[in-house]
Length: 151
Length: 359
Image (cartoon, rainbow over all chains, first blue to last red; front, top):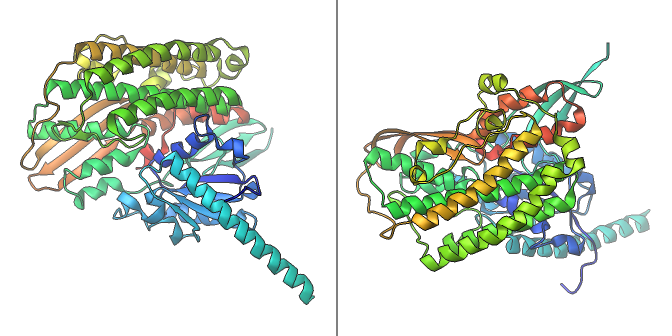
């Protein structure tokens, strides 16, 4: 990517992870990795967020929560599945309460593997997500424009 | 008579990275009752003993929680070693002790940071986490992982630390101790920090016993109990005192954890001085047949493990009672009658680890 066109805000939700990926997501925001210098902020409000970071697999109880958080985020939005559990269930794949990866509940754009995902990998995933976000934004604008012309 | 209303707290909440849900019954700004509900992170990993053999299960049980992952793995390894009557080499015991204390260090620094974040002291949060990274670097150098280490094995540990590495770690800890002292002085002496923590969330000694509090939560109420004194791993050979607080409030809990940081530095130094030479693991053959209880002192308090094997390669039952689960009744107790704005701090003072609680 040549440049970042936007200061993306993150929403982070812990699906059913072991906490490992969550502390690595937080570690990205703190001095050693410090993504805040790119204007990336961890927000608690889904309506402020552009990128949705989900860690851990999906189970019966959090499926609705993840879906609801996703629905509350404004378009265009990107979902990043952080860690192998969020990608496909990982080590807990066979556990009775795990349905699978985050893509069982909401569409996922970027998959970040690792157990736990390293901060470098998470940052890389977010940068990839920014590219997807840019494209989605273009498509979103084009769709809007077309709608206006059709009126 | 003011009207009662119920405010939901969580599961997604800006203060906590993990989902916990509380229904808070409020009368104006005062919390009258807190009703916890858990299960958002339940994975059912204790049942996975059916699908993984007892040697592979170590890597599952490690993933109960990413903060005390080393201690969960160690609890499991100790349990199976007890069932199978395996005596592990002394060097492995010392290495386990050193990694345990390093886990405690990084966990307490992580907690101090989250607490600072909860009362709105952003720069303090950043400093705590910056210091924590040094310990993670040491973990990476010695085990290869930052969060999940997979360094335990049934019969010892998989990796050794040579004397040069141990020496460099002690030097780093010496340097860190000064920095941590400067940092923790802010928690202990700053007026604004004190105003948020002192006299808030009082859990008396009687209540702590009644609600079965564990770990720093219990010790802050003046109860002298530390599972490390049972002498598992190499703790029996090391000299340390049980740290207690006396004010029973959030500040006392903070103080206990801060003192435990310095205690961990001391324990590591002693362990490095005393560590014997030799192998770090023994071969283990056969399958576990029998049952074992293991008690460990994790950063959040006492964890209890129970394992039962029946002579096949799959265990019959694995069960873990984690410290946060034991502390939830105390949390409900301290939330009663607190200000609504203090809820995040009080939730944090038990040092909640939701993924431990729900497994």
